[in-house]
Length: 219
Image (cartoon, rainbow, N blue to C red):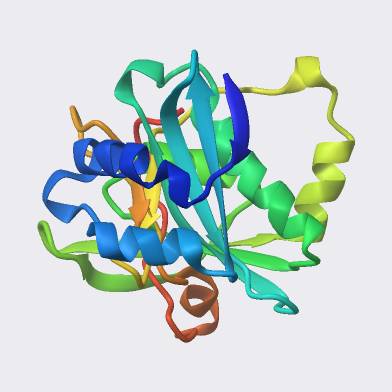
């Protein structure tokens, strides 16, 4: 699997995976185009044999000390191999390189797999958004990561000591949150929809904040 920066040339392939992963909750092509074009966002895509099999987005405006996980999705046939975690870590590494000190995300309360993934990377629960998701009055759990601490712990790990299990996808609600598609049998573990969710989640309501990551199948 190869990871690289995503851009507007990937829009068609990303939308195909977006619709497969999030079904009725998929972002519109217009929203995803805006996500990829925004100078405040960083998207990573995963390729296998020339085919896009996953993507993940981070909102981290220049000079900001906090950032939000916007979305994570992975083709269901590639889950369970560590690919989802690799995408997720690529976002966190980008945040560290941008000088971000805290990363926020929202995860579905009924998605324990995603919660375990995030907790295993150092995220902690800091709040709850009641009835946040529209597909069943499901709460969103708000989580926060201390980025310098995460980077230090990563530097101290040996490759052989890591657990690479994936947890699906994650994301917020359409252009205002992050998500990870985690519904049983769904293609993705969706993370949200878009435009800047995380930071607002932890601090309260950052401008343009979205929902957060739900990871259930991307491990």
